[in-house]
Length: 97
Image (cartoon, rainbow, N blue to C red; front, side, top):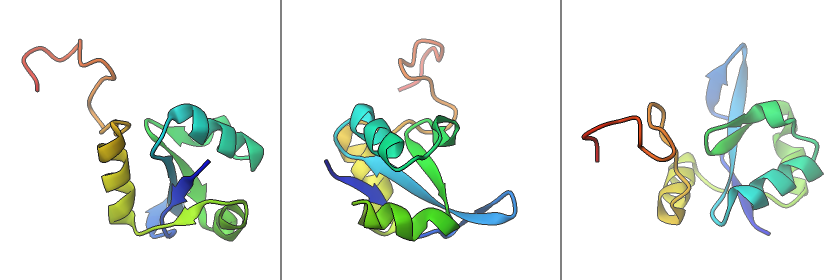
């Protein structure tokens, strides 16, 4: 099981955040998150938001540190990327590609 985490460089809600992703499956990602005690409410479309104070703990648990740019590349290459504003199936967006 390999999951990836970027540095906590993303501001929001008065703190800094990282993104935790899998390049294999959402199942793998959810299993890892559950194992390290990340609440399901932290899942957003294709990643978990991890607060900066948990970064080192998640890395010690086995997440591989990568740059933010690599997070996006991994998601796109694996077919797991779910950008904002798009549905999973695309069925509600007529004429989009």
